[in-house]
Image (cartoon, rainbow, N blue to C red; front, side):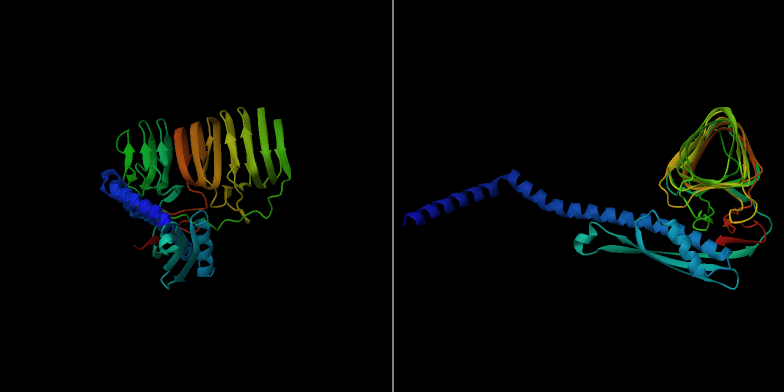
Length: 423
């Protein structure tokens, strides 16, 4: 009987406490808020997964466009094999998995491609939706046309602001060249005062630009930019095993092709003569200080990783040209696709001359206070670019990209058949 009375008393006290909690408005609000928080968190998580899938879908569309364009232009290779190579290379740094593509060529020179990719989810997985499938479609048509301007500078970043920044004191003389900016950021490009841009066209995919120096006559916004025709198509050196490591140079020096590893400092004043061939940079920086002159004909620089680059400081003159034949024909400076984004500068100089393709799709490059850059034939593909106090004259290299919403095959001639996207 004593135990029964004890448990009865405990039960009555518990009932009283529960009743007080129910009648307490602050406690009631806490319960209500806690219950409401669950769907809010789920909704936020679903939005994050949805946003990620949209970003992958946009990248998938861009990669598919590039692959389909390459398939249309390169008719001597199996369409699906070639398209798959380009597509996978372009998506190397995304959250996409199980990427599947299919391509076909038409008798009229057109090419059609479709692709799907799977995006793993985090929050949707809680409601038994482990992944989302995104898809894209692309068609490229061919038309015969007279000579068109080539894209000499292609800026690939699709969404950031200021992916092309033209500062005061910039003069570009390239009347047969187009500059394409793929960004739809806000603003996608900035043109500051006292810049002279003698180019055939500046094509910006976005609608928002800043023109501080007045209207840029060659500028077109909401414009279809060229796809990257080189992604996944350029040769990779057979070896990245070090042959030369960590050196300091002065005076007159002659270097031979090989794999360079570590830091290389070119101090004082001197002359660097480069023998023809491929120079592979493996986690390497060449630091060229004031007073140096670099000469090289038939040379190719391959940056194997994001840590490799050539730092050009003030008072340096560089005169280099790519090979004109063989495996590395017209390749001057390039890297594989999918590297992490990084930056370096080509600073104030005693004059440069470049000939060939500079393909650095993961780099943000600054040409800063360069007195004269005379490039007979050059094509540049970068993630972002800043031009500051530069006087630059150039035409397209033999590795062409046709402009005006068209593009040509990697290494094409830029004449005859041209291609455009059918939307």
